[in-house]
Image (tube, rainbow, N blue to C red):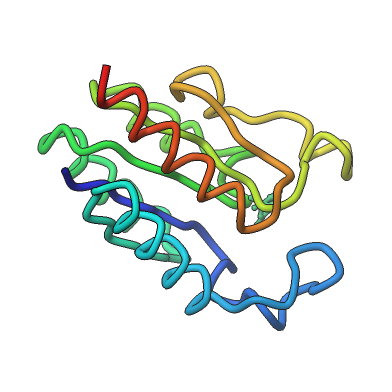
Length: 144
Ligand code: DQA
C-alpha cells in the first residue's frame, strides 16, 4: 500500500532551522525515518516537500484521485490556507495532520489550524516521532 508524506514550507531546512524548536535532525533524516517506518509497517512511503502552495495543492489532488492516504505537515499553511483546507476536503482516504512541535504551546497565531477539521486526525508535539505515529495510525486504520 502506498502512502504519501507531504511537507510544506521551510521543512527542507530541518536541522538548521530553529533547532531548539524543531531538533537537529535534517529533512534527509526525516525522509529516511519515514521510509524505514513504512518498510516495517508494509507501506510504500513517498516523501515530498515544497515551499509552493500551488504545488502542494496539485499533490493533494493527485492523492485524492488515487485515493492514497496522506501524512501531511502543512507547516505555516496550517494557519491560513483555506485552499489547502478545500483540497484536503476532497479526498476519501485517511489524512493525518502532523506537526513536529506542539503548535498549541507556541505563539497565538499557531493555535488555530484551518485544516484540522477536514483531517482524519492530528498528531503534534512528538518531534520527528509525530510522523512515525501518523504512519502507524494509517497502517492501523487501513487494516480495519
Ligand atoms: C510546524 C508548526 C507550524 O506552526 C510551523 O509554521 C511549521 C512547522 C511543525 O511541524 O511543528 O513550519 O508545522
